[in-house]
Amino acid sequence: MSVEPATATDATAAPRIVTPYPGPRAQAVIDRMRAVEGSGPRTGGPDAPLVVAEAHGSVIVDPDGNRFVDLGASFAATTIGHSHPAVVAAIRDQAGRAAHVSSAAVSEARVAFQEALIDIAPAGLDRVLLGLTGSDANDTALKLARTATGRQEVIAFSGGYFGRGSGVIGLAGKASVRAAVGRDVDAHFLPYPYPYRWPLGPGAAAGDGALALVRHALEDPASGFGPIAAIVVEPVQGSGGVVIPPDGFLAGLRELCDRHGVVLVFDEIQSGFGRTGRTWAAEHWNVVPDLMTVGKGIGGGQAVSAVLGRTAFTSHWSPGAHTTTFMGNAVNLAAGLAAIGVMRDEGLEARSASLGAQVLERLSAVSARDGHVGEVRGLGLFVGIEIVADRATRTPDAKRAAEIRRWAFERGVLLGGGGHLENVVKICPPLTIDADLLDAAIELTIDAIRGAR
Image (cartoon, rainbow, N blue to C red; front, side, top):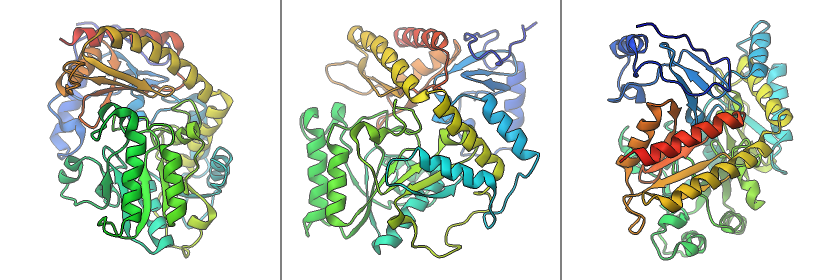
């Protein structure tokens, strides 16, 4: 069978499936992978994983020439698109001069990245500690909070996700995530204010109700909670299903933390860096944490993460207390510096806000007509579609959500998934996505919602 070649160099190229997936070339790569890879990665699941031959902008091409539009930004990490020319140029330039720089040494790339990150940080966050992954950053933030306060206990929330590293997996709001690797809890869990599925009364009361539970934990000596070092929270839950808290919730946490000497930690790894139409999601509510973790898109496709913090919470460690071999990798940090420049120079926050509003409007119209769409919610290009068995009971339908993603995949659109109950379809494309390409991919997503019957 002859396959017309396809490339991803045209970032506006429409989705196109030229051979049922997996084609012979993709299958050959999968077979080789299965012969050598241990269990645990998602690539070991029953469905054939996507094999990537090329990726540019918002388009991924497999070895057989199938072309996919990436509406999931590859785990929400390709915020400025795949292989952005500015990032590619920065990597080439830095790799030709110095790639590996020990974390005990300093490079221009390291300092320039840290300076650029502080330039776009919320006011008051004026120190940086580097990492490689989101797990790294959250682990560092927890250690900072515990050593700064001399306390150990932490409050986290249902549905929260902070990575799978050993230092943070105990904060996972889903017990199944912890159980899969034999880890116990490392936090007290309270309900996240999820208006659509608030368990303690009307959804409109979710914010006040969640704050009342936090207040009880901190102020009632018989609550069962000990002295709390930190409250760790995503301003908008990502893996939890793009759950947006009610107005006043984050401000209420800020007030309670100030009153009780608790460190407030915001995880902006998914929700930050322009994703919600602001540089950081918490800007929608004008709340600044004590520590803020960033990652994913901040690296422009490379492994970069960081903790941004107030000086009082980031300057009490002795030299050597925080180190990893590759956290000062000059190539990664040059890529991160270029990514920050792209975000700023191309006005991607405003673009996210504008395109996201259009996507929400189109999907909300579908919600009004389709009984299996319980709710469409989002900020900027961070959108969640709650799939239900029927709208009246709000019974979650994880099977249908998976079928929607599969239907779209078979037609060349990659959608994200998640949710407290695994029934949310996520849309979080690169913020650089061509508007016409986004329009075509959303139309196919709507067809997928209608076609998954």
